Length: 343
Ligand code: F6P
Image (tube, rainbow, N blue to C red):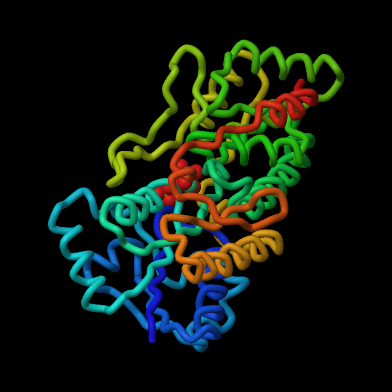
């Protein structure tokens, strides 16, 4: 019996369990054995694996997170880790591997496949929706729903107190979450990493709104957005992960203080953080994740190694993993549509 391994790496994302379920169900139906690798690439390095049966996936479709665990481990950081990974691949008798991850995790998959000939296929994931090579990633729709609901709630309290509410949302390199949720929630200003912002313009938008007779404002800011005068996203400092990413965060607090100082309007800040990544996936994300998982097994059957499942329009197709390694920045047309409602 041929054996397929599956791992989930990088930041978790609602829909990962739907992918695992689809991969396990389809593999079993086709007569493959399935081995779950725990905690991303770390599981293959350290030999932390678990056989996946029909029983393992009972009830996981609506569950957030990943039953396999995840990590931001980069095997190429240490030569001995690549060696261990290879010997564990042998030891556990893997024939193929499904790698579910974002740019970093898929980057490792690409390298192992292209440089070392390992038969790997990919499934793209990120709540940020900034992976090139696919129109959308699962997890994004769920994050947008969560943020939109938060903005709706902040609206009523902002209105009661006549305050500016700043909402800091995820989005390291791109403002997809900020723009979609800001548009859905009727934000008066949206700040994204793709466009440096001017504090004076933000304050002018708030004043314009007040002059229109509206006594409160909602400002959505992506964590990676940076003001003109600084040019760098605000970080929490300290920890850098194995792929070289620093922890972002703090732009909301900074912005809130500046707005209050410059406009004199009482301002409060809400940082949504990991709430955006937790909990049950939306129906859209469950369907997309399920279709991605099924397509991954088809890619193995077609022997299209080095390919990943991808959404193109309404079709799930196979594209080279390499295509996902570039960034998909926010569509400027979508941002321009959202900005019609600013101020
Ligand atoms: O890549 C997805 C993401 O949620 C980013 O938006 C965010 O910067 C990062 O992960 C947070 O990662 P961590 O869970 O390691 O704090």
